[in-house]
Image (cartoon, rainbow, N blue to C red; front, top):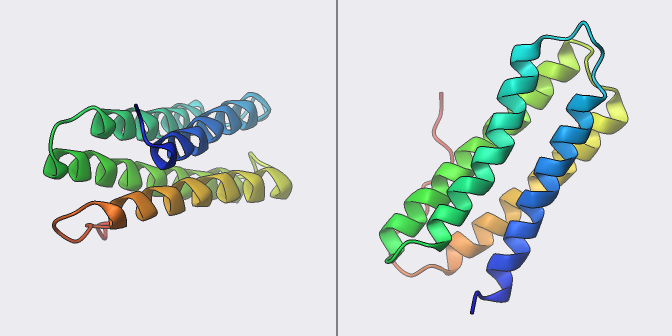
Length: 126
């Protein structure tokens, strides 16, 4: 059986994907389709990496996948900022997306902290 904290983390990631799709569906027609594609891909891939980590055997592969998920969540935040700067999203939508993204990051960090072994590698500087 999957531990409850892992299910809760997945729910946060799932909520983020739904929120991203709803927000991008509401973007004006003249917006950059590349921003939409990258935002949707990053949100979906964050959830995929998380699930891959849940299904691996061993702490090291799990930690690696969950860290990938964190990097992708950072990409979501960066792309929300890009969409905001370009005027593709209203302020309320930006704040809502960043709130959901932050909740997912916090859940993942808690899970990573509870894993035995090496310290988590959070986000790499670009």
